[in-house]
Length: 401
Image (cartoon, rainbow, N blue to C red):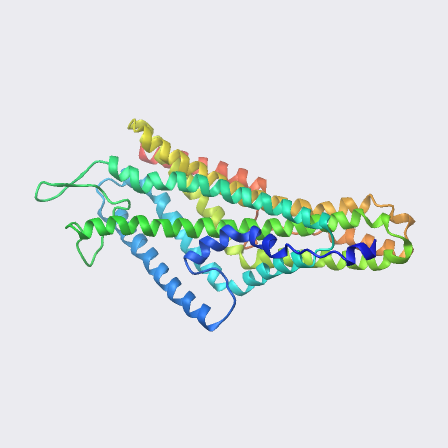
């Protein structure tokens, strides 16, 4: 058995690795924050792209906030757009988090390629690919819901909204983000049309940022889950090894388990701010989107109601995905103890049995993801977000009646 695993070579490791994070790479390269190799040309390109993208994000968000809180006559009418502002702010937070932690994230990505290249057997590769497929499925589902809700919000809703009456008694289609550009006037053509198109373009960049980072999180976290699954599979196969090779095999399993723990800990460390801001921010977004659904439903605006409902659904899916993968990671790390316990370790040599017991003891502190050590990502956290957003919505509804 040692000979068969030693002779195995994964000749498809390049394509396997690309499959894991292809969507994230495509979206994050577009906005310049994909953690590519640290070369002079890549760094210059990143600095230019990130500067331009960050300026554009601020160009959209700041005037929109100024208008909403200082210029609009009926704040209740525009409270539903606060969700878009929080969504944009979350994109900026995630944008800079990835930039600040790009070295750690690049290490995680390089580890994926190394682990696919050094995989021992086809069974381990299939376990890893199955987890990658789950990550790809979550990415596809989130992309579909996000763009299905965002495109009508930015294009169709302005077209069907009440027209803006200008001083010369002509009308204009409202901007996707009603804004107050303090230092210049945009009402005149063609500046207005250019601003309209630019806002749609910038909102697409913000959406790509959120989707790309979510895809990255799903990809590397599900890969971390696969490492624990492979560890469990190898532990379950220990009883098939003869006593001569068993000691070396247990050492390999322990080392692989430690690498899985370190990999998950690195993910939690470099993305903890993203996890915290996402759980808190999504709670607020869901609250205001619920408010938007009720407002549009009361005004009997079917298309607007449907748009806000799809956006709300996408955010719910958003929170569910990040909660599910955190819960899945914890479950897979805990399952190692169960697999180890049901081994016939009492028939192993004494030193080997002690090593197995050490693995069981180590799983008493399972790997998990947390938001800045304030909250753990789990399905219970998803339920808490749903309940909290409903409570905030009831409070908001009571204040505006």
